[in-house]
Amino acid sequence: MENKENKSAFFEYFGDTPKLRFLNFLIGNHFFDFNMTDMAREANISYNSLKSFFEEFLEKGIIIKTRRVGKSDMYKLNIDNTIAKNFLKFAWFLTKQDLGVETQGNVSAVQKPLALREGIIV
Image 1 (cartoon, one colour):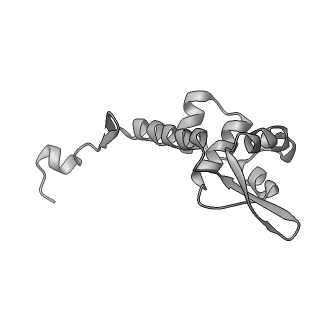
Image 2: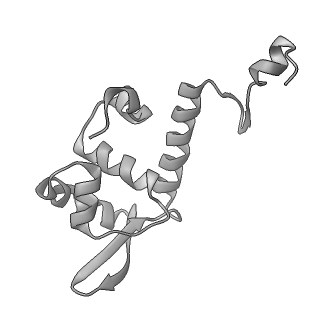
Image 3: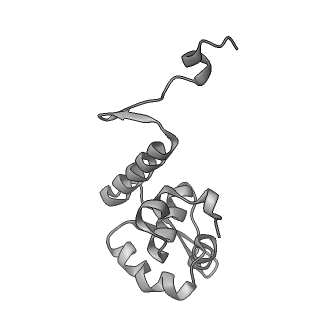
């Protein structure tokens, strides 16, 4: 489990629930596919908790089945799905807010490095 200093922006804003842990895991690993057992273990939730909402995520297209390895089906975040895509954007927005990155409309503007702001020559 993540320690308090390393908590995701999601957990800070919305609390620590199995669904948010699962979504946080998917966002951090959206390039890879996993079976349900590995997803539950890596998201730090019980397999039964995952089963309780997994089908709902599949039906809404938030996650997709990518392939079958042996007897295990593999799944990943469906970045082509509007809900998942907006959730990913929102996650990055919260992260940027926590890091102090200014956002202007749809364009992100990173603050100048401290050396440039203070006139320090590097």
